[in-house]
Image (cartoon, rainbow, N blue to C red; front, top):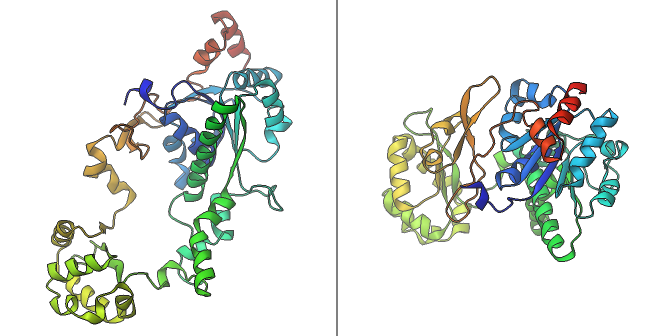
Length: 391
């Protein structure tokens, strides 16, 4: 998709972030067309050097951005940062509460200089007793009930992705876009805060509502009573090739039974309604499991797809590199990862007018765009040479 047609083209974002939550705000805005300037410390964001499960953070959440390195412990670095923010539409930061304010880059100071600025802070907690605590994705998954719901009883388990960092960042983007719409009417920016803990609470709100409605606390997902009789992972004739199948309506139940020759079940009036089948789950599931265990997964997939039932082969993240759907229409973007290797990573999961937002800036090397950004600020080549030599 041509960058000029993207919805946020023309907006400038200055990003003071690290790890995942703040960069996820920035990468969404960048993918949507904004010019996102990532301010890194001299030597680069430490996120670049994480190992293990953190090795993918920087490559995934920093494409389509420009990088400049500034020393925010120096007067020159602070002055350049303020000059960047003075001309920006949006600022994104996710450092500890008060960090940027102590540097003279807090909301009040920046709004005085730039009243149209939308200042997005991604934090662990919103206002309240916890707001100055240090938080991480996993911390809030544990304290917000998500880890309890994910693991089996007595074994809380974090979700298998930085789901709260990313979802919290998405809420940050929602807030920024809402503030932009308000700015269209008022001409003024404002302060937006998103957080990990409150995001977690929002995600488990359905389980809180379940308690309110039923009077019984929600059970962890591995032992929950499902809302449907068939809604589970099944073994196939090849034990390593599991398959999730869901039958979530009365019409789907009828189609399922007809397709798989379960005429006695499909014709039983005692199983005609969903809640009846849920109560009979212990009788239905063993029969379905035995049937699926004698069939090849490919044959099951073909039949389930033909009748329009929800199903999913159990995949690993690395299987997605070769997923035919993602590879068909811009679902994966060609990027260059640290070390110079080429790979493909997921695009923003949106279409505009039938097209996917694409790549207009590869993942930046450390400070790659510093000279160009300084030139945009009005510095000439001699001034840029002097600034960079003293950095």
